[in-house]
Image 1 (cartoon, rainbow, N blue to C red):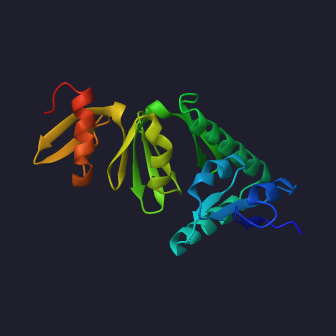
Image 2 (cartoon, one colour):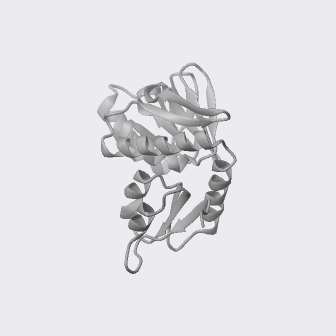
Image 3 (spheres, rainbow, N blue to C red):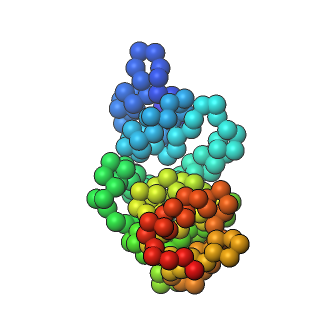
Length: 211
């Protein structure tokens, strides 16, 4: 049997999920299902498509199903590139300062962007829109939370439920009742109240004055 996708636990009798995966030669898409968050990075290193925590959320399971369906509608050579992207991502997590680019999946393959050129990311449901310095936008079918975890080590902060911003691209901070971050491309983003303290702590440490 050569299944296209495998939902695999980690802690199992006789051998664990990673040992079992090493015995499979045809490279199926793998989704790890486990109660142990500590295995997430190891799962990424073996190119898992997703990592579901027990108890499983039905909404997350549906999102995983969508990822699998999208992955298996693209050409085999692109799927191979996808696995290489995951390996690169695990390398970034091991050594955040080693790579300054991000790889995004477009309609006809993968595109590479400089992380420093990202102004902000806007969450739109199960999609994320990247805003770049050259005023281009790029939409990806992943949630903003996925990128929040990935980009925080590179100087990004979630200042609103719908926005993740590159702190280096903030041009001005307005403080008149509410706090608003003016980005380098002119976008104004209101800072959510529950994020205000963390954001102002950063501002006081990095900016001489707040307007």
